[in-house]
Length: 520
Figure 1 (tube, rainbow, N blue to C red):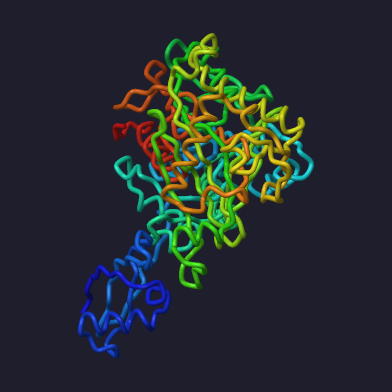
Figure 2 (figure 1 turned 45 degrees about the vertical axis):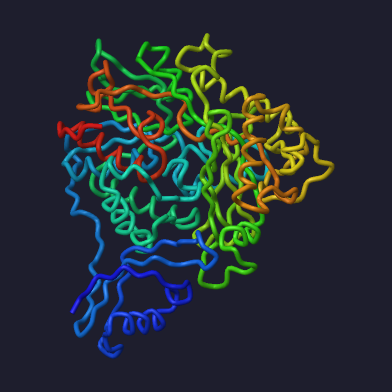
């Protein structure tokens, strides 16, 4: 017998296979001796009440053996001599586009301005320790994109955009733990992603795909309204009438190139704010309503949103048991972001707290046309660099001091490796963002008692929440609205927001480049 169940159980029952088996035996009136296996299909945590409950979707096997279904990658063909499609960027959109192209019998030729995952580590150390920013190899640029060393969250609300389960299964096939197919908010972890990305790269190469690291694209070759190829910083030219542009949200030089060449782009409002760090113990106590979460509950995340004067103020990219990282892509700017390892074992929790922006907010930069939001973003990052002391030291303030308008007399140590400097953050942030954050933190305290504490530290700015432009494309063909054969793709083009949605968009653009219409 095989029976699917929906269960609501205490954490210790969900965390102990023997206890779960006994619970199911009693609930379903199945002799425990007959239960051969309990397979968990989905798991989520319900912490809305004082007693935390685990929701499980499970299949119980009774009187018959359980055989685990293997998860494997497709049987990819050799595409060494196949038609070439050029891909700019090797983040999730570019990687999954390349794999899908191979599946379709096309040869992907990838151009990545940064280094492979192993070589990137040296440049991450340089920005953390020596405050040196490599403009081509950093937390945002390099093999795997920003997600490789920025947490590996796999949760997405974009389920209508593609097959989420397919993306997760592919990741498992390349080495991710099967658990990502079970958890409601799956997460791989910064420490686990690099070997998975490396396995994808080796697959692409073994099947005849081509990868060019340390290769910055500097121009697109056009023949009227038809793409014909691209040029690189080294002066090399590559020809193809199909180019997938999957650069990520921080490729400002590409946005400037498109604007300069008269290739239509649009201003896209984004959200900006700060990154706040609390002790993980405090967040656990608030979210789980307990002094000690125990061994059966993971470090708690939080997700909170409020309306302040008609603007959304909300948490973004929350990292339980995580670290705040320096994510600048050019010298002379400060950018903060967060990540967690697979175990989320650090003593601190951090989250972006950001304010929804509108087109009218960018009027002071209107002379830059569709790049106005990007210039607004850049101006705040550069001001933070000046206030931080012209290094990667981040301007910071204790949370209650931020709300009450005081310069913090001292600052505790935080997880931000380059260090922090006490600054009145009102001097860094535009007034309307600062005011919205002040009111937002007060509102957060109403539902998360204890959140507004001076033991928490505010780091500025959190500025790379999404792309500041959209590269418009035809919803049927996914080509640029004017340039045939150019496929704006993923987060940098304004069509995704995270690893999974970017991966799905990469697959869609690959299909479109092969003449298979998906729409979107």
